[in-house]
Image 1 (tube, helix red, strand yellow):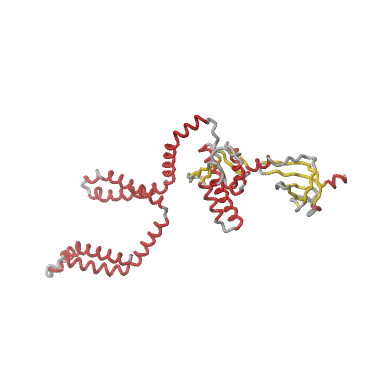
Image 2: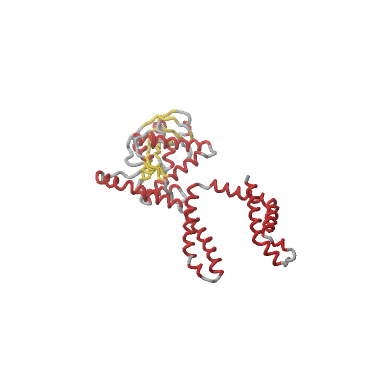
Length: 366
């Protein structure tokens, strides 16, 4: 069907050109003795036939080009096309008003060529501005609408509750971890739970990974978010904005926390440190987990099973029921055995807690 339309277009184009220019060419060549050759209708027929024959040579290229344009436009999101078209129209309107004074100038280049050039340039610039700055326009419209809808409610809430809790921003690691859902269920987190759109995008990317472990972690994170949003009595808000000039998700989280005066919830040790350096409040899930673990003091005795050897010479590794790692000095010879150990020291950081111990048998031997 598209090929037939191309043929028809060439026939109409050829007939129009033949009607306008073939009689002038005949007169220019001085074929006055054959006057019927200068007939416009004969020129129309000749032009249509010539361009119809040409269309058979170029129709395939034209059809392929049109299909390529069609496929490219289909892939472009509707929002991008909308804002690009708005920008194009604004550029053409501006070009029209600029060209109005130029029409009165009697110089052909100024009155005809320059207006065309201005329309092309401004139309292109308008399209690019609308297309590339679409996210800012969307955020601006959303912000204005939300500000209008929430201004009165926010004033009333501030009057009732001047110490309103700050929003809590979840990062990717704490969502995948899964413990955040249980914490929300216990009502330990106050205020709105904010889930940025760029974090959702990273989760979806992980869930679509070819690596099985990553894919399972990403899907678990999405399940956790569904549970928080649908089953738990917390206020969840999806932040639609983005910071296109910032590429790393952790940096975007810190920027968002500064913009909305929020608190980042994470179990990422590095993000915790960077946030502290930039003056952003952080809630570390590992700190909470460490705080509620049973207290183990140096000098106490424990019964543990040595599972594997440690990094240093003659070290063995054991674990408590809550996952806390115990480094057993001189414990390599007891791998696979359950022994009594004596706690020598405890190291506790935001990255977790580590207990150092030595076999009680060695202590008795001394």
